[in-house]
Amino acid sequence: MNLSEINNILEGLGISKENPGSSTGKEFFGAGPQIVSHTPINGQELASVTQTTREEYEAIMAKSDEAFKVWRTMPAPKRGEIVRQYGNKLRENKDLLGRLVSLEMGKSLQEGWGEVQEMIDICDFAVGLSRQLYGLTMHSERPSHRMYEQWHPMGTVGIISAFNFPVAVWCWNAAIAWVCGDVCVWKPSEKVPLCGIACQNIFNEVLEENNLPEGISCLVNGGVEVGEWMTQDKRMPLISATGSIRMGKIVGQTVAARLGKTILELGGNNAIIISEKADIESTLVGAVFGAVGTAGQRCTSTRRLIIHESQYDNVIAALKKAYDQLRIGNPLDMNNHVGPLIDTLAVEQYEIALAAIKEQGGTMIVEGEVLQGDEYSSGCYVKPCIAEVENHFAIVQHETFAPILYVMKYKDLDEAIALQNGVPQGLSSAIMTTDMRESELFLSAAGSDCGIANVNIGTSGAEIGGAFGGEKETGGGRESGSDAWKAYMRRQTNTINYSKEVPLAQGIKFDL
Image (cartoon, rainbow, N blue to C red; front, side, top):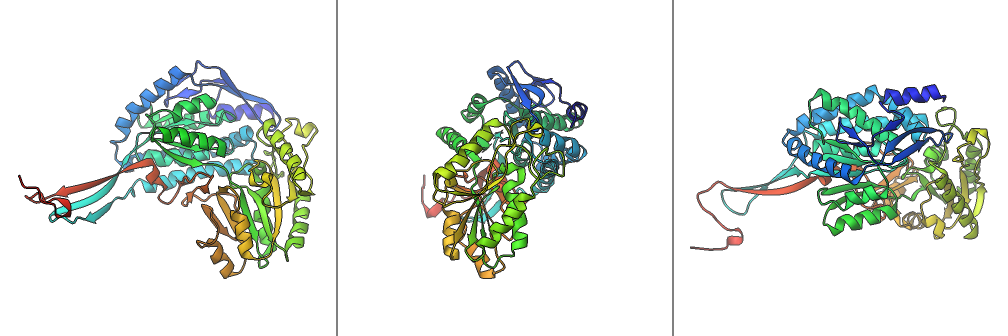
């Protein structure tokens, strides 16, 4: 992609060479130092965004508080109408925004468009949800009383997102929070700040067309310090944070210390069990994409293959053949399968992991390396690799955000499930089998301990409508579908006495 094409993308999304990084909606301001965004495709500087200062942060929080008082009084279906309009704006900008995602983050163009499609899908879901924020009516033990529960907005929701899904994860949270009556303050990853500017610019069109107040959608930018302001802020009753387990533990402890609530979406160490009764051909598609898609930088990326000993040699041979066919290069070229890692720090972690595999006793089946040459001038391109390991190795227990696939054998399904569950993370899992008994055991209480358990599809990807999230050190949070909306609201129980008496609960007498 030449400079002119890049400029067309940036200009089409309202992004300048230098951009104020703090916003309450239509208003942008920025007095802080610059964050410069580089594309991992070739290392080229794209544009810069100012970091949010403490003064700007306080102004944003004041404005969000004002907006909440207005937004919460708007009927939920009316809030859904605003989200519907935003979804339509995303449809209009799908090509440009998808290209920006690929350009700034480095994922393939198809995945960039796919991520914007996730935004569109969650907007559609949220529109329907805006008419389904149901409570319950319950029978009271007291005569002539009615008891029910209802749900109310919480206030300002803080959203801290990661670089690997620079737009979709924010929208998963924001679209649901908005229809619930909350307002949002978003801190994108400092590695992909331009995507945040673009999303805010698109939403601003909806704000202007509907004459809505500042503060419904707010943007802050910066590093750890800005995140700390949010997690420590009692004005944010809920923090939704996506990132590493280390980050999540800090966020969780900080927010819990002020008795706030969190939605944590943290690491994955996802496995596919390949049964002796698996359809190997269809298995390979899901396994290989899960391992190398987004250069292994999805929280749902396939990290481990647990293969039945009778199928092991066949699967390994097929994997080698598939890996030989992988094309690595510019992700905007749709002929390529694998793009770059996000930055050279990620490359360093990849190299550390390769060394650790060998030190801990693993055997490389497909060797990994950092790629050199003009096509890989950013220094962010690595070769996807496969290593034969044991599940207990320290490096296997740790999630490396890179295209490293671990393989191991099993004898019976109970052993395979124990291996699948035998890591600190609990996000996504899958079994490949044509045997109903095996699939049902895997999905039972004695099966996978993950938040997502699939049969005959891989671990990678999330479908809007299901609650997305995982257990154990993945954090326990749920986003996107099902009843995940309840995390963005506060529950209230109400009792109405329509009699002329005042009977007390449990038959207690209190005569005056």
